[in-house]
Image 1 (cartoon, helix red, strand yellow):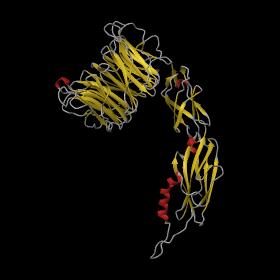
Image 2: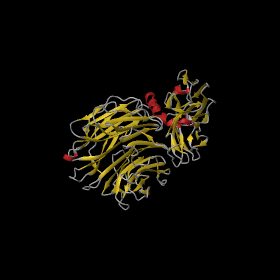
Image 3: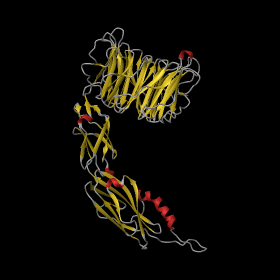
Image 4: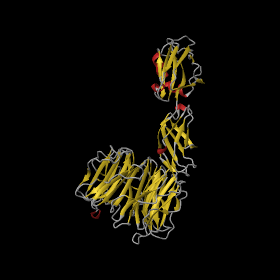
Length: 633
């Protein structure tokens, strides 16, 4: 039999060594050196139902089949033999595997019963003599059958522009026995990679028609199909609906929105109340408005959503940070909780979410008196309970402009701090790695003794990006180890096109895209598509009119941008949007949307896959009001 040279044999060496120590492998002559002893490994004969050759074998059996595998072995020195199975991966019960009989002797029998679902199990089978020498083989048992599918993420793409998607299910790999293909309404997916039995990644074909798309997966033993409602192909370029939809009753303001797949949540101020509305179909229809605030005067709402968990945070009466949580997709909300309530002013709440983790940061204290400090609180149960608020880092001087993002139990903050001297705010970062229990000491990221403004932050797992303004210049720094260390700051955009204002950033791993207004009237995007690469600048608007409120979103191959173009006071202001389907290399020409003829401002952009939703403040009525529109499949 082949010696222990394969992967499975190596995995069994530790167990064999332990057995050798227990049983002893050599004798010593009294008063002399050990006498060499020759002990040959047992020889194993595998059943003919197996495929492969020594030392790696496999058995592929339909889920409804049964099989008996009988292994035999002989030892050259006629030593007694012991058998053992060393699990490598998978569950033995999932493939119907059981041992028939004892583990001693020249014969070892494995029984394989019927199972209910396809599965695979890898193991090492070892036979060993009493003096510690052994032979081992790899054995992979595959119970073949069609795959099953659970979900696809994202749930949409542009019909003629490829986008990476991830499909989850079962029986996609089957221990390497399956050859998996993915089709979108019959067209093969591109660059398909099976990560494991439950995950396959692919890219959409560029030949899809707009509308619902049926995704099918074949593993060589059968196929499964997600319902066509699970995935949608959208037109490219995007076409919005002809009529806008009113979100409020006619005098709403301060709208913030969040979405998870097709679930969209809008929170806004109206008539002295904080109002919530939800949509389960990407903004096509909305449920009835519900008031979340109480007797207090609400301001500065924030909202996050993860699955069915929705968390809303706001300032009450200018001094109290309040939160309400829903675990049923916004159908009902728990009573309001006071996260922080003092007589001191409170403002600028910011919230971030990752799974069940929630992080909130705000400013406590009067900035005019030099007392404003960044405070933070966290929740580990999707906002049901909140930790005692704590100062992030008190440098003894006024702080402000903070932004927050997170991944699981790690969260990052960027803020301005005047600890270098009054009127000299620097850009500082702080990190928590224990779910908000402690925060690191603030570290200066901008140049010493240089005043900065408008810090921005975004994170994606271990990649974190931050920008700030220095006299109309946009500066940038990044961390590739979850905020442990940061790169030296570089210029993302200088003043060659005019002073930079109103930056916003989005990121995807080591890619970062910043949108900004240059010279007050042109909108640009600066892109860094890999850590350390030089920024690429793209001008989105060339109109010689004022611009503001830029928004940007990035996922996969797509980059979305929106902004306000033209003057609000004159009534000419309109929301514009542009799209890149090649990771920001090229953008479509700006286009507007909406059926109104009055000023539009304060755009809010939400994206899932290729599904776009825009909300804005519109002056078409007696009072400014909130409207929404979305692109069509």
